[in-house]
Image (cartoon, rainbow, N blue to C red; front, side, top):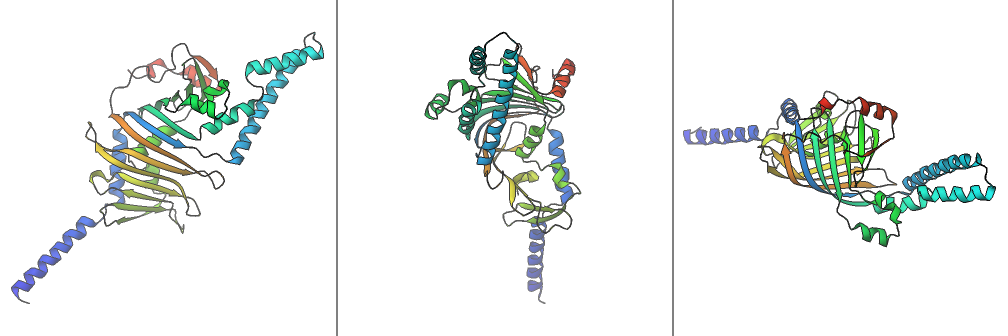
Length: 352
């Protein structure tokens, strides 16, 4: 072998070695450590965004709603009738007062009035402001409806009394032990069972792989795409089809650009796409646009949601009263355990 040929061959081999090393995907351990660090570094978060949502309406789902509303109407009617029966009234007077009470309560023809409002919210368009306390596992969402509500009510023949069920302008406060839904006027606050699902979902919308998917519960295959992105395929032991697929960006940090979760028939049951990554004031590179699709079943269809972030603050101080109900709002307890937890909350737990 001539010196020139040998030198050229070694140069080519060295170049191939560099390409091989550069193109080799990161290991699962490296990715797991990176994303665990991302999640741990998020202590608080403020996000403002515009959200468009399509909620498909299925016949079976509507029938279930109608049945529920009819049961509520019948139960209230029975309660009022029993109360009137104890009074010294004629049958005609009881019937008249019963219908009057039903109309005044807004529970007469409940299904006929509520279902059109429910249908009207098939397409949502809202401005949202989120406050997240990841340390205390709390979230506040202030939501404003951007649609022309007067036009919706007029065009779809919805009674004015049902406008609160159409209007999406509400405030939600979620903790481990209780949740509050505050109406637009901030006069009533329904108290329900707690939920912190929103915090976990927001980590995904920051491009962070859920910890449970990188746990030892799945066998994960790692490969490199031609564009430099990394593809993870996870499956449970012995499964023929993957349980999930994750695409990580080729740019710094291996943030997610796509997550798909499959059912046992290898049909996508949830997918989220993340793009428009920008560097924020905190130095983090985060997605400013996401689109998620959730399969609700063949009869119902797919729920889609597109989010456009307009402002994001990482680890900034949160207002002291951000997770408290509005002062003077009337509490409507709908869950006994949630009420007990709400009464037992410590004011000292509120952020300063």
